[in-house]
Amino acid sequence: MTETKKDLLYEGKAKKVYATTKPDQLIQEFKDSLTAFNAQKKGSFKGKGTVNLKITTCIFNYLAKMGVNSHYLKTIDDQNILVEKLNMIPLEVVVRNFAAGSMSTRLGITEGTLLSKPIVEFYLKKDELGDPLITDDHVVMLKVATVAEIDHLKSCALKINIALKKMFSDIGIDLIDFKIEFGKNKKGEIVLADEISPDSCRLWDKATGEKLDKDRFRRDLGKVEESYHLVCDKILKVWGKH
Ligand code: ADP
Ligand code: UDP
Image (cartoon, rainbow, N blue to C red; front, side, top):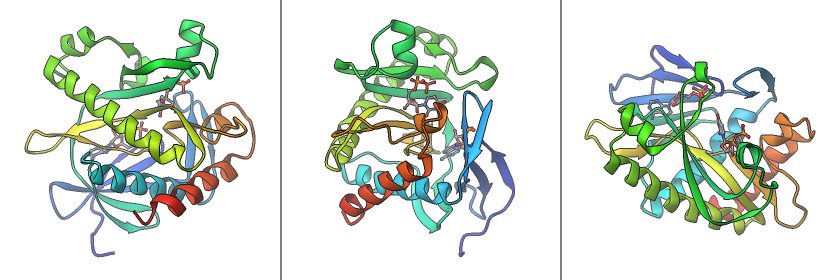
């Protein structure tokens, strides 16, 4: 690879982050591990990192064409991408089109209920607190983002939702919800970061309702590997050449 991995800066649950020879660029290595429930449940399958890398980069390429800039710079190989180094905003920004997961549990809404409009939620990225749901006022009070930045994050998340819904709908999949992360580059611009993959989205087959995402692992539904590969094959076939 032309880009050289320098120090390992961080090892997360799904990726390793390396410094490069350039101070404003990082290499993200997608790992084969799968974790859930704040890493209390662990698993893996061979090739999972590659599948998530391919789905993420396909989505980031399409989003760039739709006017949403991400940290993605280039693919190095099957497990590594070069990205813009960002100062991460410690929020998990979740967009929901249908009720599922923690929203269904918290509010008592049956999983799969269509929401009258997409909802944006903020979770504070803090493993030791279990990433709690927080309000806009909490975000400002904690100095995680300003009111103007919150508005920008929300409108950006909703724009991403429109693009993702189209991408998945065209391959016969309903986008139930997803999580994204943002950071600031050295110019102070807010940029989409991290990954968008079956690890971070709920994806249900439109025809059968079958889950094609990390819930298969979380809930011991089987066919985890097959589902990730199915999503990857379908998205690349239709959107890989766009
Ligand atoms: P986690 O930290 O939740 O275990 P990962 O294993 O995916 O997650 O680790 C990737 C880490 O890299 C995350 O903490 C994420 O916030 C961070 N990250 C993602 N994109 C960038 C970027 N462009 N610059 C700096 N950090 C990033
Ligand atoms: N999500 C994620 N990382 C997290 C928490 C949630 O990628 O640490 C994604 C999850 O895959 C789903 C969406 O965010 O697509 C909403 O998750 P939810 O709040 O329902 O939490 P969960 O039920 O997964 O605990």
